[in-house]
Every structure is written in structure tokens, then in C-alpha cells.
Image (cartoon, rainbow, N blue to C red; front, top):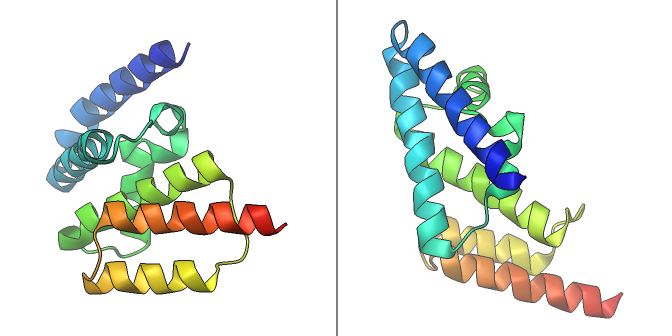
Length: 136
């Protein structure tokens, strides 16, 4: 079922790309950035993006519209989409946490300053989440 929905989403992305790319070269570039981020995250961090692929909020067209409306510069698209997919993956896997903990705030700051890698950041969030659940 997930594979069928993923295939349908991929076909939809391809048709969107064909219709929009003839009119908008920036959309074509953005679409390629989104696809590269999806592939990189699946390979690098062993993400299971099945549910994210099937969510219409994460189609290239809706992300492009959101990026343009949010004034995300084209040179930040890769970082922006990577952060968006990472947050969505964490929310799906561990559930949305309404309040950010001190550990996650510090870990995010370390990630942004380049002290730790993305995979180390995710490990810290997992450990923090496990600790917070055990304290409840």
C-alpha cells in the first residue's frame, strides 16, 4: 500500500515537474534539490520516508510554494528542505513534542555551528526523547 502511494506520488511529482518546468526554471532546480535531499537522507541516515512521500505537504510543488512565500533564498533550499524532512521524520518516529528540552536546544545550536553532524544530532534527540519518556 505504501509502495503504491509512493509510486503515485513520484508520478505526480514527475507530471508537476513537466508542467511547471516549462514555465519556471527555478521550480525545476528546487525539485531537483528536494529529490536529492530525499535520496541523501534515505541513504545517509537510513530514514524511512514512506509516510513523508505520501504526504501532500511534502510534494515539490507545495514545498516550492512554501519556500517562495517564506522568502527562502535559493542557496538555502538544500539546508531548508533537509531540516524540514528531518523534523518531519523525527515527529513521525517519536511523536511531536510540544516543548523543546534544554538538551535539544543545545544540540540544535551545536548542529548549526558545525560542532556535531546531523547523525550525531539525531542520536542526541533520540537519547533525550528516551530519557524524557522514562521520566514521565
